[in-house]
Image (cartoon, rainbow over the protein chains, first blue to last red):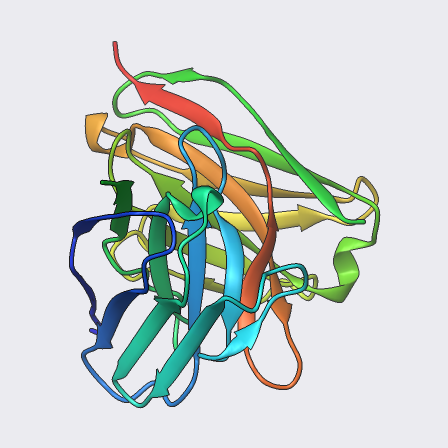
Length: 106
Length: 121
């Protein structure tokens, strides 16, 4: 079975920081990788699909990279609204999610 | 724009069947795949499966023996049934559109607000 992992599980950062979250697939998923943002009490929101394509309305300060098994989500300058939990999801087979990374304010 | 809304009982007895409805507004359900995802309180997301208007389905192997998804195009609704539930099935259940995106990719967008289902006697 395809497994998704994320690191770190949580991090503390400040507004303006450059932050990178990593997602790894247990097998080659090409670029079929999505990133979602979830805030407390809210449904997840699609940020990035196809590993690097921004969903409509997502600021260009958020960058997705990677292919194959290793992927990154980078915030070039963290904004106050970016503090949330982030999940990666593969879409090459079923739709397995990673365990999530919580980005907290330092 | 397309909006989704989950509905169904908030409490289900152990060994019973969980039944949820997702009502779609703003567009026909015959044009896309439709998914269910769940999230136990304080934990991560688990993909349950998806259904297409042709009746085609794809389920999480871990849940496949207990899951059935279906659609009613006349009501613009799709459904989730999960049998033989236990406390481990307590979660917020979300419905979402599984969308093919350009240039390449498949993502879940939009999502419903979610509905909490508790399995307890």
